[in-house]
Image (cartoon, rainbow, N blue to C red; front, top):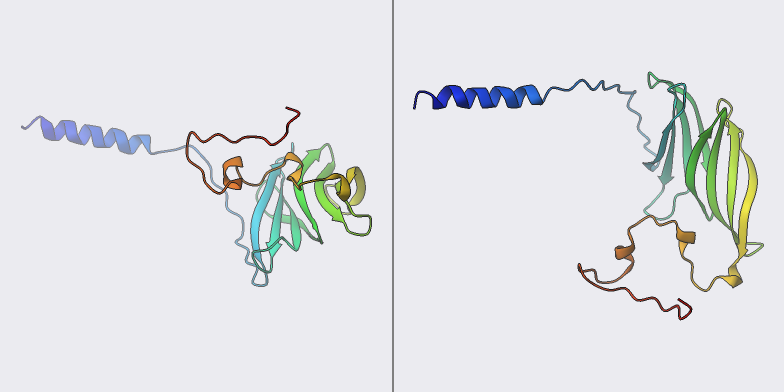
Amino acid sequence: MKYYLPIFFLIISLGIKAQESNLKIIKSKIFTNEKYKTTLLFAKEDTNGDIFLVRNYFKSVASPIGYYIEHYNKDLTLLKSDKIEVNRSELRGLYLIDSKIILLQFKYLQKEKKYAFVALTSVKEEFDFIEKEIFSIDRDKIKKYDHYGIRKEPEFTLFKEYKFGDVVESENKDL
């Protein structure tokens, strides 16, 4: 019985030692936005250690009405911030290449009645985005809107019921 107590404390002390970490945590100034609800969409770090964030903002739970693009240095001090307002579009990607920031935007062009992928390109320090269309397709050629293979949710949430072992059949007769 007298050996159980030291063994117990030895096990507890090993567990406490295991909880120590050499991770360094840096916090930025806390920001609040009283006007809109925001969520973090993308975060990328460049070769200098600077961090670029894209947050979407909503008035309600519907589609986003805009995006905040923020540039922080390695000490998480805000260097530059900009806002992009959108209508019938959403950002699908953030890429940092050399001295440029590229945002991939998926949008619906109502006058032309087509869907398009657009690259918004800017120098990292400026945030003066130049729009260039990459790909587009007429709305009439699409039988069912399918996010072009980019899903925000897993496949199984698209169906009414999900149980492990269910089989999802394709209606495509050509496969």
